[in-house]
Length: 250
Ligand code: NDP
Image (cartoon, rainbow, N blue to C red; front, top):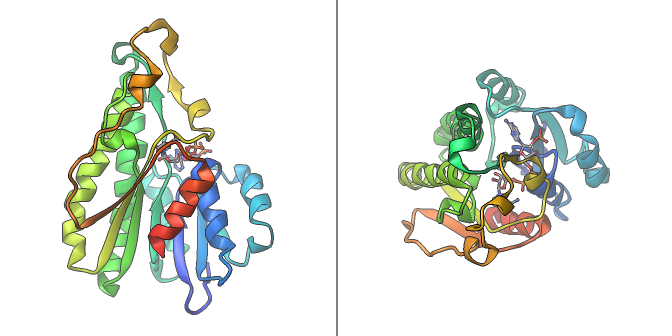
């Protein structure tokens, strides 16, 4: 992967669909070509949608690399393909959902959610941090969720994985400040992507009358330390979240 002089190298996880794809395309098409985007996905067979959306930017300001955030080896291999392992901006976007009553969800599925949404992010941060610390610069962005602040019925484990991420980031941000590394979290409300379709859905919410849409989308405000930037959005399209992410970098 070769970025032009002066370009920021931005690595994004989970770019096959949804928000990750939109962020990758928006940054790669930046008018001033300020970014070299490394768009990653676990299965490169799914690249067509991204390549088509990127148009002329593909292979110029956007490179593709395979990356499964659940695999140590895949993460190491991906970063070893980046010149000097130099990443200016890491956007941790990959994530999966899980809906259903806890008693009927397998432990295996619950662990998969944590392995992706929590340990997947940590695995990436661990790998990029040494270079960022050495250079005393860098920006780490985490796609959390409004459910990282407020639990929602039948999303127990998903919300817990995002809550866990919030705690991790709030703590890490303080340490990173000393190295001039910024940590930002984005907390979108419901966004229309493939997310819901891919969700591990155990039991239809219809069987559970407690799932009233008016009550499940209420999010409380919480105190956050000033060392973490938090950008909250509610009920937006993936394009809006991509624009928000671009503003966070700029
Ligand atoms: P999508 O399902 O459309 O996209 C998720 C992306 O993550 C896909 O590219 C998927 O790849 C990838 N992914 C999943 N597991 C892995 C893995 N192990 N390694 C690498 N990539 C992986 O969902 P969204 O775009 O909506 O979600 C993006 C982020 O936004 C997630 O972190 C989600 O929690 C968060 N979010 C989403 C909201 C929503 O309502 N949609 C609301 C708030 C936050 P593949 O195609 O291979 O499955």
